Length: 531
Image (cartoon, rainbow, N blue to C red):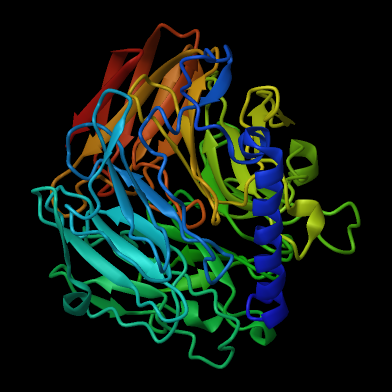
């Protein structure tokens, strides 16, 4: 994909003009069919056993960005920035419109407070991420930038406002930044940062400025070369930098965060933490997604290790694009490609994705958004995908059946319980089109949501694992602060429990390897566990 071809931008502008003209001729039917009505209409009751769009009813309908300069999108982030127990949402809107911060009112609606919070950011922004950088218990924020917009870091002051501390952080990038993920790779207690850099226009730029070690004083040091990640992060030298979606995850079960890096042009990488400040590239030839975009990391088969789902591009002609990938962990940090067996290959032009148990049957499902514009017409109205787990390692695509219908230019996506009813809803961030909030009204089983509280500086216990056992069935979640693709899920653990009425045992393995055990835990609750 060459985003810098002048004809690319001409075709894109022409496509948008045609879309607007068609909307004018077709009236509300077209807008509703393509972008959604905003949901929450008092005239049309919610559809049972389905996702229902509630964007307008939730107070989220604002003008989206227009003519975003790079079609990789802008992005969104979510987290409880004000500490009131309700997940808030931040949406970037590019160079001409200020960033929006939607504070959750706790009644199913949101209040926009971006300017009040000091986050009315403009510019060619991309890939935001909330994380507690200084260990004070409040979620701070990083925001990437493309073309002429620098990377920025904001400190949460704990009073509902943020302060720009980019200069203090000493993070200075010589080019653009796309996505971010946080994890304590050196186990010194604070959260380090990985930044992806998709910028094919600078193929000769040094392979650095990716991994930033947190010094514990609101400053960071570039350790990309020292960590040995720079050796292969640009494995496809002719394409330049094509990194998209990073996630720290302990894939070999040794207690140290490894790094899974989704990248374009058959360049996705696996970096195993060597426990001495360095990483080893252990990528094998079967990690061969053609155009890796988004990534999700979780234990989808409930065997106790972390698997990896990567979105890509699918075409009926395998000589062009061969679709998504499901990489199943063999238990030792090596992976096998089980895409065909799992039934998740055909996802269109995929972007952000997430493992989430939407029907709460105890098996993780997969949602992902997709789309591309006038350059490749089959993907213009590419519908979102919802792969529901069959409980045997296979999935059935069910987006239409369950109402997760979006034919916009999906880029970011977040799975979050915005209304605190125990199930996971879906927020879709579209490129230059309205974002959408889908409330989960599926028929579903029981649930448990676990939030961890740990001493400073890693107050959210990022990297911890939560294991549960119900009637002989085991599940595991690792607490992440990463990226789905220019978007993030909250850093907590959601479990679907099916018909189980009690959790026999719950075990937390904290980042420092200490253990907390609880037994006979009640279902259908939001449980906070403090170390």
